[in-house]
Image (cartoon, rainbow, N blue to C red; front, side):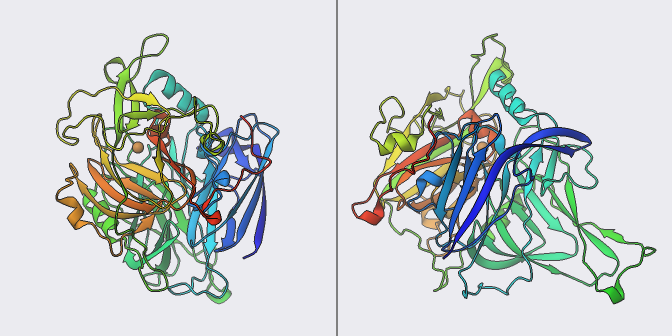
Length: 528
Ligand code: C2O
Ligand code: CU
């Protein structure tokens, strides 16, 4: 492979959305930020220079970072943030991945405006396992707040209530041509009028191709689709629309964002100015169409071909059962009033641990054997209490705050069952793992049954990805091989749930051989 150099200047830029201007944090003044393009096997070197008043760090979401954990980016997990006036060079190789990923800021809520696509092309001369696309067009969904996003989250964390819902969904940073209101968050249905999509890739791993009119995408997930016109329709523009799939109790606005797809016509049949252009609308499922959502997830299967095998771990060395969900803690705001139900504070946890970010980077503490006072290696493998997670839950035991990590020996085969607790209400949580892809062996509703459900696991061609939606009021089972030494964050990709504590970290030990160890940190690694 070759080396691809990029320079990211973090700077403020004024942008106008929803008829209002505000100053946002950007890369090189662009929003969304620049696209990183590389071939599988290439080295990517990005020099990030921080010119803004905020601390910054950048995460390359979905990039495996095989033995390059220092370049992963989550603040206080693998590095201290890049402070104002400082810089840091992210240096990593793209290994065994092809498709689309994305990069985003990984500190506080800066990723609301700091993000951009990563396109990983196959190695030179290696064909796609599907027809060669004519063109690659990235489409990125986001959310927009009229208010400053740092203010939105700080207000929520101080009062214990839910943050204000966003004012718009965005497509490639734009709020859409007919945007009339606002929306919340969560998974999105996406469709383009008069077009079929063939899903060929999920989270930069090829899947068995399947055709669909509608794609469901969860925060933190990426997918590649081949787009084809169904029927020739002259003088027509096609709407692409996205709107949430939501089942939770949280308030949200079921509105739609849109973009327009138009074809450039050759000059002899080009429309003249008098031709009326019709606008064709797609149709999307109802906002709570769980039947569609479940069917769509089940269609995703690894290609599992001889060229692209699915290396599913067949045995398990370490088994974990994680409850994920929201909870209510006693009010601890200084003025004693909190905006959670019955004057409580909303919190979120895994196995009742509400993860607290340390003041220094976990990876540095681990690498230099100085975990004392930074973290404890006792993340619980099971929840500390047992109850019916989806029925009528008992009163919620307050989540315990802590910086606790789970330690894994090198090359351990790890199985994690993630169970939505539904304590405050059933809600889907997009769980994202850094440093690995995992296989999604199975999912279901209500309580996971350790005696019955594993018999139904797909160990042949499960989809391989880095982010999975834990079904609302249900569970999902994943497996990965811990072959990448370092400290790896795992968290809900809904920003506010992460802020509330729905996160944890795995410490994966070095192997014995030289190529099984994490190399020393780069010289310019930021200091806290
Ligand atoms: Cu896309 Cu830890 O994040
Ligand atoms: Cu969540």
